[in-house]
Image (tube, rainbow, N blue to C red):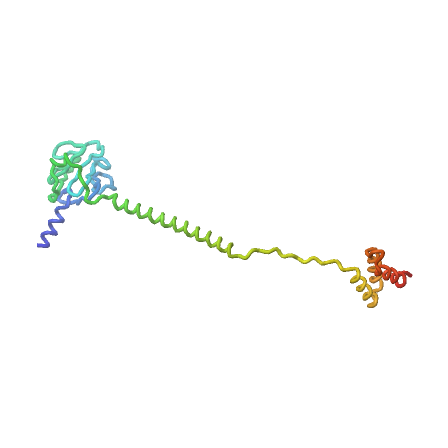
Length: 228
């Protein structure tokens, strides 16, 4: 019983019969002509490169002549397009093909009144792929944007956490007091640096106030020790 059902399912698929050979028609466009790129290639110089196509639906099929020079005939009638039913004979050039679709439930009469519906629409997988690609792209964009924001936050936190920079103040040397200069000059004189000591005392004398006792002392020392 199972084998019989499988056999019926196979032969219920639409097909073109040519010289005893069965050419099954998948859902979608099936091209026929003399060009090698067609699904069914007919070696006949009177045929166009692509002579006609069959647009196959779930339980319906439409033949469309694609502007052939010598025409396409269905049941001896030249057609530009025609809805096919089981047993229709298609003639192109010297070839006669028989359309076989015993499992089709559509009839020629209701095809004129109803727009066919595909069981498997080829663009649905493509649409799903596009949607998935767009979703992935947006996720990547959002991730990069979030990473950029995280980096900016880290930089801001680092700046805020960094202690304020206090300018280093270099202490300025206070000038020596006159009494310190005098003491240093005396030490230089006693240590043997007489010339240097005399020069320092000579420079010190103008800095002292005339009433300063240190000025009188320095002047007296300079005259006694330094002036020959």
